Length: 219
Image (cartoon, rainbow, N blue to C red):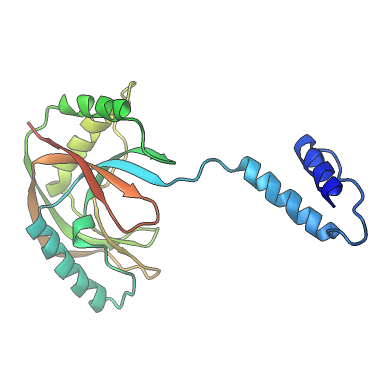
């Protein structure tokens, strides 16, 4: 059996046809499955374990307010998706990393140096609309009261991009939960806070945790 296995490994690597298997060996169906699995392993890249993104995060009191009101909206609309933790509410500004492990410190320092140069004062933001996105996310959005976030996102993207481009399509939002049922957009009492900093967030894939790695105050 050891000889047959060795020959099979060689043919898999070279992409040639398999040798004839002995009667008591692996079935043809088993060989086909092995070939498909092997091909899939070769095509697949490294498993994504870590994501990093720049975000705006509400203060603790506002996050608790969002959580309380989100629980009420969830019940009123008959949704069953799990609410995000209050500490996880955020407005995503720019993803900067998705991969296996974290980037090295020099790369992170380079991002931070660019972000420090962004000319942006503190500003007020308010979300006054509840709606569902196509992916099932129940979110808070706004219009005029979220313009400051649109400006910040554009300046941040330009700072991180070696070749600044025209304004990207961007909808500031706070995700509350995910659910298979969608709701029609509706106005809600505004939830507001003052944005004073940008946060670099680490989100390990598959874990319900966010780590705030660095905070950069706005000018």
